Image (cartoon, rainbow, N blue to C red):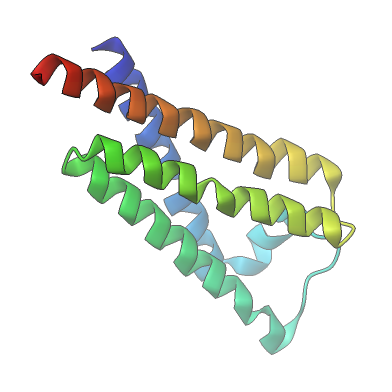
Length: 134
């Protein structure tokens, strides 16, 4: 039961953070974008790609929340592991484009590790539940 509570709490925290960032990228992209770690940000119409990041983050958060709400823990665990590729990709792009190494590792790769741990916990909870049911 404790493992389930921890897994669910970490999942909810992840959803809240990702949802928050998604909203920020949609409504105040100029304020939040520099914290992502890239060395240079586009301006004008080229900066519109930030809204794509916002939609991506919101959609990811909603998928996670739906799977948690319907208690599909096995699917949730696998989705979390797959979604961990997003911060890995973000961090890698920052490094490739001479952005902040501290942001790449301290924000993006650390986020990926947290999402992976949460996904593995959800898979563990699902496996225990299946064993108890059998």
